[in-house]
Image (tube, rainbow, N blue to C red):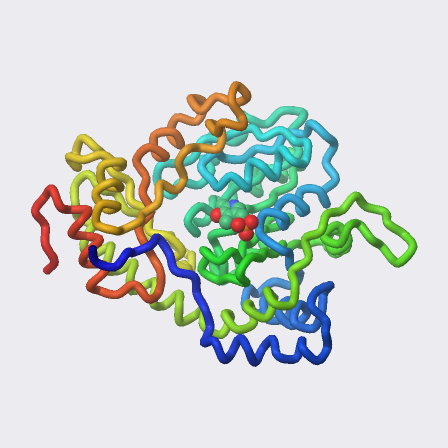
Length: 375
Ligand SMILES: *Cc1c(COP(=O)(O)O)cnc(C)c1O
């Protein structure tokens, strides 16, 4: 079989550059606890993301969990979110003793359907937690307008939206807080890692303490914190990768354009268009497969790709409100659009180094039944 193609390939700097970046640690023996690299990466990221406040974390999930904790909502408060997301979003709410209330998504860009948002608000609602799915930016104006009326906090899951801007403004500046993930599979990685960008300085101080066991000083522990500190090796990887992320995003744009050209006009396949006013990071390439029109189901396309050593992902499937661990607790029929899309969606391999020959192989495999071959 020809070489395997995975859904993504983690961005890595040249080996020597990483070695040079971590070398000083063999002199300082300072490996974690907000060391020099941690501070340097925080400075560089706040510049790159055009944000004034950022707190680095060990991973994106802990960033989200602690951002929710630092809001200090009363237990049992309701958080309006969507089920068309990664496990992390829903788990973070539930692990904070809060209750997710699932809003459906819109079928165009798969973000929260703002038309259905207001009807879900009750006197227990404390926050809205929307997701910038695949880097598609939510309707933030409407979300924040509604949140303003009802006095709700807004926390964005921006795990997919690294480096994006809306009307020229860094995406981490919207809402009360935004979470980014720097996991190995994301556009920008620190191996594992994440961050919270936020508005309020007092909130930032709470976050800072919560990621270090709630320690205020040597003798006072006044928060029930966790351990979510980004270590120096992670930060060093981030410093190195940040030099290459622009180039990576540019290469991803070319891959995306190739897909758009080959798959854009195929009946039964729907690909997303770019969004107005958004500088994209080309994080994912989702395709919606309509079985009837296309002549094959999403699962059949996925299987055919697998047979040819190509690993696309059913991302997001299943919905988080139909997870085994939440059995009997939620009803996925209340989010019919999300349910339908989750059964039709496939995200194709996408990373900077994906070459034309591989792209051709992938598209041919998808279009196999139509006898399509590379132009
Ligand atoms: C990756 C991801 C997370 C979690 O980030 P980790 O860094 O893997 O912990 C949360 N939400 C979404 C939508 C993600 O894709």
